[in-house]
Length: 187
Image 1 (cartoon, rainbow, N blue to C red):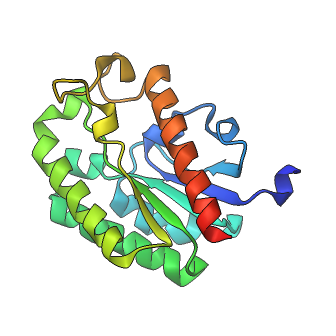
Image 2 (spheres, one colour):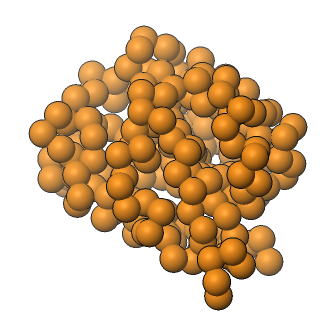
């Protein structure tokens, strides 16, 4: 299959995607387009969405954002509202395309936000479960923890916030499986 025949998937959100230098080559089953921007919040993703994403005409979206909102002092409830606002932007411009929200990760540098991250993830997860496909929730929160329930240090760079190559390997495996499932459901 030539690349143009593959479904186009836009990856949109914060630096966890921006800094993933091999993202576009990591998912051979799709035509991946990385439109993430460093430091972005869910609020900023909603604000810039119509200017950035629709012209690419994606078949599906994968979103990762929310930890910067919480890091900036926003509440979990605000994060959920920003997600709903972004979803409204997606629906009004792109219709009912499949959208996968990747759970907010607990990083070493944001351990103090554990409760807020878990609450925001839980609310968004329930919201998506109540609506069902074509909305999806990919829970990577627990996959990134060690046996004591703390962030696995090898999954993070020295700054304790950004993913290391080992962290990206986990994300690649999990997101790839999720994309396969979404592609199967879309047929």
